[in-house]
Image (cartoon, rainbow, N blue to C red):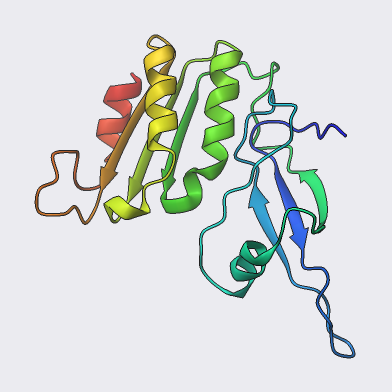
Length: 171
């Protein structure tokens, strides 16, 4: 069954198969859809391993089912109706929706930028994806990332992005 969504939308995932006490409600978390809306084989979410809900999700097996609602969110999306260039600024796992959104922006021929910052190198996600997307879309997609707590032998960018740096890059 197809699951249609716009780049930038999210879903709610509900815990199922867990015995609840009287008056208890199942746990629920919201997750950005990180896959491209053009991939009709399904969809992906990205989960940071932190807390009981991510442990629950990791424990699921292929045949297990969960309840989801969505897709949700209509104001923070990219579609063929997007008329302006797109600048995305993220810290940590906040970059998750930008994976889907940057792929859509490129597919629709929109100029876009992703500025991404994390504390440590091990916190970085999707770097290969963004770098390949930038290579394939040299005129339309631009990607920069930085670490605020880089390791000793870090050759990449360090520190935070400033508004002046972003403005001069975007033009």
